[in-house]
Every structure is written in structure tokens, then in C-alpha cells.
Length: 272
Length: 238
Image (cartoon, rainbow over all chains, first blue to last red; front, side, top):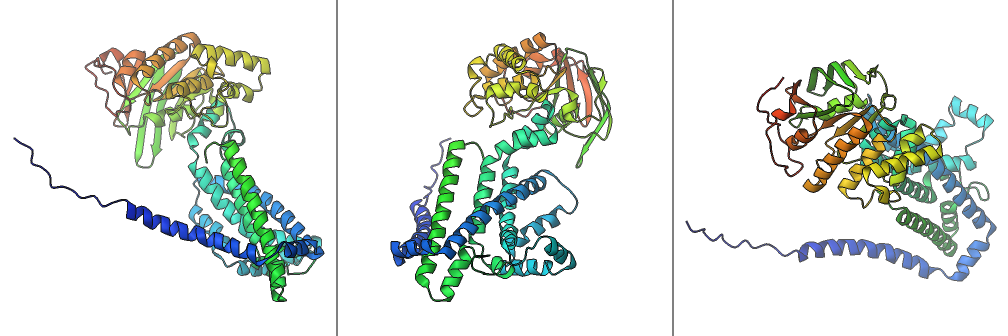
């Protein structure tokens, strides 16, 4: 029996698919570059030097860098165990805990600041304030940054641990590891790229945090002023050149951290 | 020696009831059964990675039913080797001894001995990335044997390998077992592996375990790995 020739199946060209993808991706990348270009050309090296010469702005840079570093360390200390427990274990109410962990991501930042302010008006908050002043002081800056940054770090670590094969950890247990030893010696080294991503994300979120800091820590110069606060204060008095110069400093700081993280990630290699 | 008495496992809707068997010291047991019959779960229960509802697990004369995996003294080789990406081959072979706080020169001697036994001396400073499937399984075997366990559990260790490598590793497993005297429990789908390796054949069917004579398996040529199949037995099923 002779095979009947099938009617020719016309396959649409792939080029419209890639053209659509490229147009959308290119438009977004172009928007980011335009934004950076506009800021870079709006200001002059003179504005930048003047901004860097201002003692208040130098204080804001110092406080921003220190508070972001501290917040990142604190966020990792919390995010790694929370991410691990949420990824590896089942327990009653896990879905509820999962939803609670997302609250700082979905809440408006100002509301987080207001919530923190109210917590420190409760009896327990006041008692803590008497021993260790927080509100409208530097600890308030760090706590406000931490509340949001940590939620993002937790998400990143959860995804990281989800992607790691639990079998390796089980092998480590049979080889003689306790749970803790298996975690420190096998799981965490394998998750190092995820840890780096979580740290980068937490640092970047902290650097850009403004709303909760304004409400909970205030905007006092030479006291609780961080770089986003400086941009706000300079804009509010009409000094747009200084505001743009400070914004550029933040952009540069963020780019440096991203570049360091990328180089470190490429050098260390490995999964996740 | 492995002695399992009336072991019951339950996970979700799946259940294994009253499983009992005994492997004498130095014996090579092969555990077979269709996909989903609980072979891996039974192996994991022996390793302490899956809790048992009831029953008793005795390894080398010691009741380990309530012990954690680390306290059971079982070498475990999973299907894909599950090597640690952050360690070199040398670090893999020394890992279990390092956990046991052995002296550095003792660890170095044991690593060299294992590397020679398994033919991986030239790989000692490599990381797992880039090792072939056969090399990865050799490293996984060395890592599991490093602390000289009384029992070795292998979960389809040859299923992802090509036929030539599988033959080589079958030979290696037999020679390593003869050299170390370890009691081995090997999970597989392959009748070929069972015929070559088994002193005792254990078949899991419908939640129950039956013992069989490995020579009762139909002679089959070595086949492509990763085929899920039910072992076929001619006669003599216990």
C-alpha cells in the first residue's frame, strides 16, 4: 500500500516571536538607560564635588553605608534559617507563616514605618526605649530597613533551598553528620550563590528605603539622615541639583555592589 | 548483617506491611520490584532517612530502629551519586573520617587506599563538576565506604550508566565487597544486575516482600539503563 502524501503543514516563521520579545525587552532596558543618562547629564562634576564636600551629605553617605551593611548581616542571619525551615520542613500552619512572611513585601512602606512607631508606643516598646532608645535614632533607621529587606532575603533563601537537592543532605547524615553539621558543611556551601543574591537584594533594598525611615526615624540632619532622606530634603527646599547629585551617588554605590556581587558569583561558580 | 523484622512503613496512601528479611554478614542482597512498590523507601528506612511505623531494624547485631542516620553506620550510595559540589574528590573520601575526628595522616592513608581500590587516584583534586557518571558513582562509593561501615545501601547506583560502564562497576562492586566484607543491599530494576550481583534476591510485590533465588531470574542480555520493569522469575520463588 502506497503511503498517502500528507498535506503540507505550514509552520509560521519564528521571527515575529523573537521580534516581539526583543521589542519589549529592548524598550525596558532603554528606559533604564535613559533614566541613568538623564540623571548623569542633568548634573555636573561640580555639583557632585559640592555634594561630596557637604558635611551633612557626607554624614548621610556614611550612615547609609553602615546601616545597609548592618541590615544586610541581620537580614541574612534571619533569612537563612527561616528560608531553610520553610523549604525543608512541613508543620501545622506553614501556609499561614508563609503568608505572614510576605506581609512586609506587600505592605506600603509608610505603613511599616507607622506600625513600628505604634509598636514602640506599646508598654513593651516603651520599656525597651527606656533601656535602649530606638525611635527617631539610628537603631530606628536599621530596624526600618531590616523589616523590608529581610522579607526579600527570606524569599530569596527559600527559593535557593527549594532548588537544592535534599538527597545530598541525607547522604551527609548517613556519613555521620548531625543536622547542624550537614547544614553548615554541605547545604550552606552549596547555597552560597543564593546567600550572595539575598545579601545583594537586602543591601539594595536598604539603600533605597525611605518611607518607613521617614516615619519611624525622622529626617533629622546629622542624626537619622540617610541618602534617600537627603534627596527628599534637598528636593523640598528646591535644590534639585544637589538632589540629583546625591541620587547619582546612590546609583554609583548600587552599581559597585552589583558589580562586586557579580564578579564574586562568577569566580565562585557552582549551582544556585 | 541486616535483619528486618515486621517493618511497617506508611507515607500518604502507600503502605508496606510486616516486611521481614535477613542478610547474613558479607552477603550481597538485591532488592527488586516495580516502580512505586517501596524499594527506595525500604532502603531509606534501613539508612534512617525514613521513619518506620513499627518493626525492628538490626544492623550487624545492633538494634538501630530508633537511631539517627549518623548513628547507624550505614554507607549510602544514591542513584545519582549526590556528590557535594563544594568539595573535591579527596574531600569527599575524607569527609566521614574528618567528622569522626581521625588524625590527618590516617585520613590521607585511607583516601589513598580507597582511591587505589576504586581507580580514582587521578581524580583526587577534581571537583564533581565534569566527572563522568561512572566516575561520580565511584566517588560516591568511596565516600560511603570511607568509614568502613558494616552495611552498604545502594539505590539504583548503576541505572544512569551506559552498558560498558555498568559492567565495569558491577565488577568493581563485587571486588570491593569481597575486599571489605561489607553487607550490601542493592536496589535495582535490572535483572541483569541482580543475576550478576545477588547472593540473595528480595522481591517487593503488592506491599509484601518475598525472597527468591537469583538463579531463577531469566537470563537476559544486559539492557539499556533506566527501564522501569518488573523482574521476571521462572521458578523457586520463596
